Length: 177
Length: 201
Image (tube, rainbow over all chains, first blue to last red; front, side, top):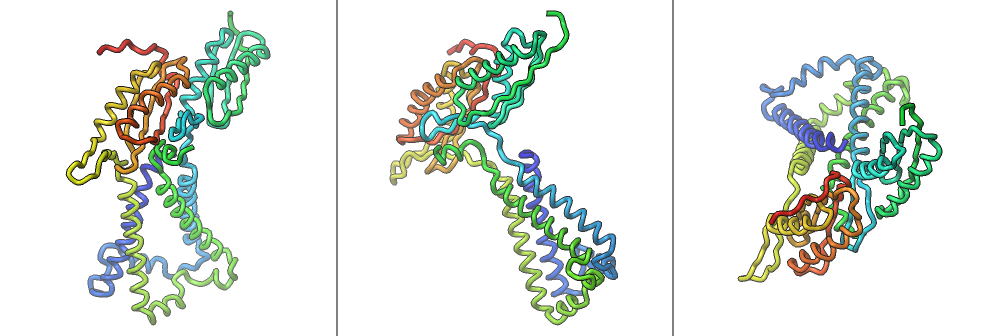
């Protein structure tokens, strides 16, 4: 979403500028030289198209809904395009340390996979929650505890500013050990 | 947590986000208003009136000059806001040179690239760091460091911190002759399982 905002924000700005410029140019033209009035934007044609429509007309409603949907997308884009940095405790004042959720998930994943009984694992991490899904050939319950312990131990070594909740689920898969 | 070091973590998208949110709100509000009028919330009579309302047209005709100036004002405003927004979000993040002395006759500035190369070389000698990227952000009077460190697997973060603050940043502070240098460190954990390659001088 952040990348999309980065791409779309200048375009929105450009769009506003173009609309403003068109309004300015058309108004001044209609004022000073009415003979050459619709200079760029064919607004008299738009006017005749809109003439006769009431607020109840289907096309007015459809346009309003389309504008609303676009507006909602723009609004959501502005609201969700935040950073998802995971903050570590400050080692010294004036120094801020962060890492990415992906990097944290990778580190947790290495730790989980280093357990002998885990055959595969997937990890999703954010600054508030770490979700581990692991598969094993052994009874799941014992491995679950071991994995949980391993992750907790790792989080002690990694001084995160805020300790995330850890959820571990382990499934037993069939296979030859 | 220091505000300035926190600000150096990444380029802010706050302006873009605020403007985008406002634009979205305006569009949604316009759409909702038109729909409400159409569904007769403001009176069934109003819903049946034409979109180009004769009353409004009459007002425009009798106040032609005022309408013109309003339209011109809105046009100029939109144009200026739009252009400012576009330029603002297209402008690259500045890489400030650092001025060590502003005294006339002995003005001394250090180039951005020189500082960053020096800090990067220092940072890459830290045990467990396989790669470092360094840049300065902020303005020449109040620069801040942004360092991205790639750590090899199994590195203890606390050791890296100690060495970073005790050696690398201490040297940078000494060079700038400042007591505190706001720094944002971005760690890339466990990026590769290979050990740090032997350094060839």
